Image (tube, rainbow, N blue to C red; front, top):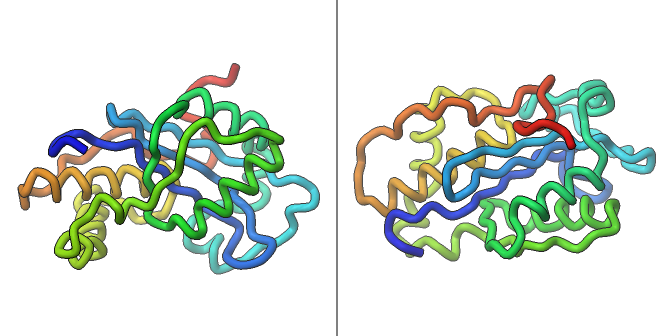
Length: 188
């Protein structure tokens, strides 16, 4: 990766952790900085729900049923927008599993590769990663955990490490996926 090149970064919000959990929102930020975010309507067999997870991301089951997109629509959209790219995430073990569940439900294969963002970090950078992402989150004035905003925090943190600049990140408008806005792009 070039020193100032921004990779595509993805984050997934889920119904909780462990067996039976499933993706409820997926968001990414493209190398250009453009965000994408979509809520995912649960399938009938997706029943797991953790109230603690809901308290963290603020997405209710009711919002998912009324505003979410089908797993097929979300998976197809991800494939169209991310085809051929390596997309980075910070919770690879969970995100890979949830992405697999999404694509299995859609009966599609990902057209992109998901990779742990830590492969881009030196040991010294990895040691300061958590603190840096918290600082960037505070500078961006983000209180809730949502998929596209979390992805943007990761991307901005990586760019800050690469630039060697300790300056605060510029507040980024328009990278938030609101519960009543299932996608940053119009439906097709």
